Image (cartoon, rainbow, N blue to C red; front, side, top):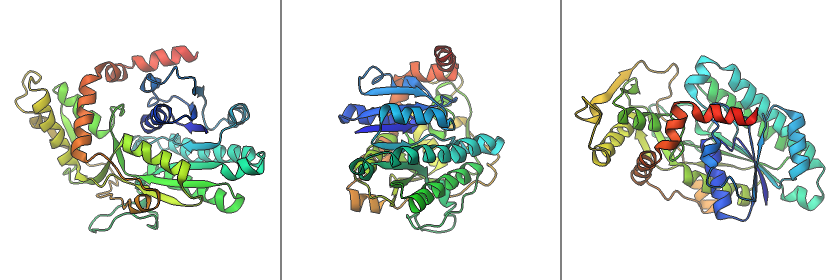
Length: 354
């Protein structure tokens, strides 16, 4: 197959591309705008592979999308390009509306035009796979329920509302125009190459530097944690075997309170990095509680039984094995995250593009 991946320089997108290039014979075209969270260094191991191509494109640029479709003639689209940080969506929602809603609409229209040009066998085989989030479902506070594929949408933040909008657009293009779409909604990802503004890498790197470990509110917000390489396997399974018009929830079966995640990281660092920064007796002493995020959902939890039952996927990593691998990766790959923190990855990248 020839697979067009949008947002392939991001955290999950780069994991998907590494998985495809390392484990299949497929070709990948990576479209990425290269915002602050897009890092081509996350693809260094496959960058020179003859089956990998990169196009520096904003998905809102229709003419450029048309060019890429006509030039590479993909058999499938995996749409991961999105603004995804809740705090940033609260401070500046416009970028989320632009990329997640307008960008998805533009990509759908470019895809539809291309799809309509295909001969019947290729048209029938084509897939548009939209990758979304469990945050569109809202809050499971005060219940023991799980998000299923039938759970109604109740997004709480500008980010989750913009993703909910994109989900609805994708389903509407399938219902109205017949575009062969599939939607997946995933729980919180973690693992190698995770951008340092997110909880797990932030805690690891702050602890190593002897900085405060900020926890929102009381830290009892519960998330289902999914190791990113497990997610990449699931996404490839869906794009190659999933049923058109279906939705698949993807979760790690690992519900953890945020404070317990932070304490687990601290315990691992006590074992793996016993020589602490000056003035630090225990990593957990660095934990501080900060004012909670506006509209903060208390609990997310995924029922991933459908994808396991129908497509035979289930996660291979428990939270305990995945978080250890993650901490060890950050300890062994300081070159990657140091360049992210000091901004040099971005400066060199922008220089290369100009």
